[in-house]
Amino acid sequence: MPNATPIASDTLAKICASTREHVEACKAATPLAELEARLPEGGLPRGFTRALEGAHADNQFALIAEIKKASPSKGLIRPDFDPPLLAEAYKAGGATCLSILTDRPYFQGHDDYLVDARAAVDLPCLRKDFMLDPYQIVESRVLGADCILLIMACLSDGQAQELLGKATELGMDALIEVHDEAELERALELPSPLIGINNRNLKTLEVSLETFKTLSRQVPENRLLVAESGLYSHVDLIDMSAYGARAYLVGESLMRQDNVTAATKELLGTAA
Image: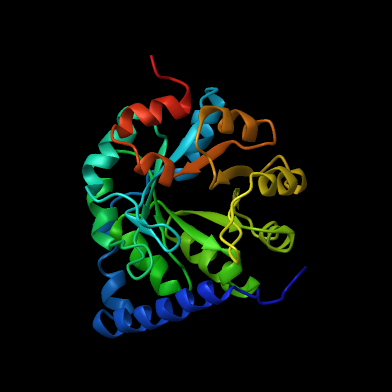
C-alpha cells in the first residue's frame, strides 16, 4: 500500500498553508467541543452517494452542479452570484446534487453559501473546500454538508483515512478526488465508493478529458466514478459515460450561462 505524502504544486501548497492558518483561527474562536454541540444545526444527512446511484439506476445523467463564484485560474466567474437562486435553477434543470465552494481566499466562497443553497432546495450538497483537519469535517456537518471533498494531492494516506473516518462517523459521504495514477492507487485503498477523477492538471491548470479516459480503466466497477472538469456539453457526458463515468461534476460552464436552468437541461440532454 502506497504511503507517501503527495507532492503538491506551489499553488496547492500555498492554499493548504492558508487553509491550516484559517482552521487554527476557527479553533481559537470556536473550540471543537463547542462546535460539536452545534451538530444538530446541520439537520439529517440527505444521502449524497445514494442520490447519485439512484439517478444512474434510472438511466439519468447524475449531475453534481457546482455553485462557484470565482476560481484561481479564471477569476470572477459570475458577478450576479446568488446561491439560493442558483440552487433552485439547478434543481429545476434536473441536477441530482449540488457542490458549493466555501473556500474564501482563492474561490471567493463562504460558509453561508452552503447554508443558504441547501436551505433553498432538498438536493444533497457537497462542501467543496480543502479538507485538512477533522475539525473541518465537524464544521461541514454543522453547516449541513452531506458530503465532503478529500483531495488526495493535499493529504497523506493517514490524513485521508482519518478525515474519511470522521465523515462516516457523522453520516456524511466523501468524494475522493484524484488527478493521476499514483493518487488513484492511494484512493482505492480507502473504503469510500465515490472516486472523482479531475481532468485538470494541478500544476499546469490545463484540462484534458484524456485524464479520465486513462485513469478510469483502473477503477473497479464497485466504485462510483465522477468525472470532473472540462465538461461543457451533452456530448461530453456521453463520451465520459463510455469510459465508466456514473456522475459528472460541472461548474464553470454552467455558472457562465444567463439561463442556468436551460443550460442545465441542455447539458443533461433533457431540453425540449
